[in-house]
Image 1 (cartoon, one colour):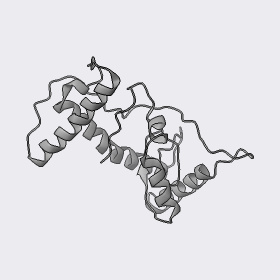
Image 2 (cartoon, rainbow, N blue to C red):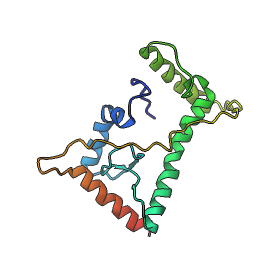
Image 3 (tube, helix red, strand yellow):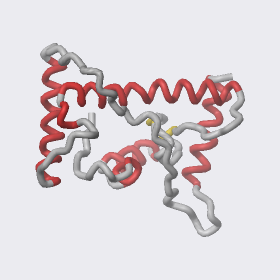
Image 4 (cartoon, rainbow, N blue to C red):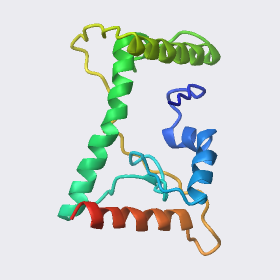
Length: 173
């Protein structure tokens, strides 16, 4: 639904998200009282609309269930990225697009459009070789928490924790 290929691969996902055109739209929707949740990995900041995993060495049963659900649901988008890389091998991590960054962005966007056309026209995927694809599911990074007030409180983080804890209590007992 949204592809952002303006940044090099070394740019952290949370930086791209924090500088995207989608974030202010999502914040506005949330601030208007609409309830929704985006799922992010541990590299994203927990917010009332961005639900992230709980990094706990001794999780209780509800937290483990939540973590398993969250990870398996997030894996769907990682699988989509993997399928795109199977169809267009030039997008694999170890392949390098030897072009200027602006041309690389156009190639990535073109691959995405062509992939969606293939899906629409039921074009089968090429057979995958035995190369291990990195879908990005095992990345654990810290995130800077923007928006901290003078008392060192981050109201969006506090609200995100409250919502995530309520989700765990209600749906993962």
